[in-house]
Image (cartoon, rainbow, N blue to C red):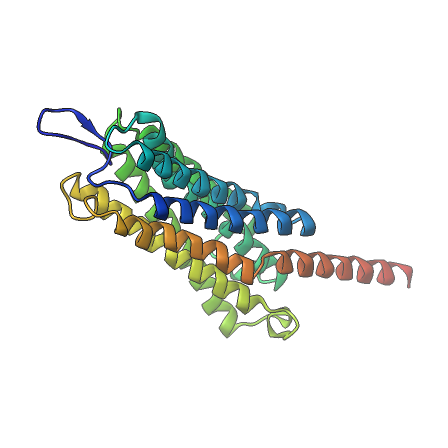
Length: 273
């Protein structure tokens, strides 16, 4: 969030942005996103497209911070808007891929009846929430004021919180009424649920931090100390990328495709008898 000085002039930051920190995070996000791009294309896991785009948004956002650092103290509006907008919107794109993976995990263990939202509606509802909050936050530029940004962040927390509750309810139900697929040790769905929960918690923490940051205003402690944006935003979002590199969703896509092929084969055999 920008502010103003004693004479009423525009000030982009309440501190001098760190060039090394911005460059390091831009490099890490670029490397992580390159890895995801390669794996996504290699495995044809196309529901990771939002996550990949979000990763590039993060990288370019930190490039914007590096550009601002090079301009200190004569900041211009372009790099500031670049980093502010892209770093605000990127987590919503991460979330979109997370929503889509949960629907596929539920289908993989054939537990659609245990979900509180129909699988074919799940992605549509939560992604619609993503579009809504992203639109609000993009319009929350310096010329529109911080209220729109805070509103978008509250929408993000509400939708993502409901998503986490939906995932928890599903896991509680399948624990008490497991399907044959859920009992199958060759289907590591619990590992992928762990990845979803871990990344979801990180995104929620980041969103709460951002709300507090903007509610405090330009005179707040968080906005006056750059370290917090790296601890509670950059580092957490980088961790989300790392989690999905280690526990890659392509395994769910591959197993789901194999399960579908097995079902089709079984139907063909029964028809031939």
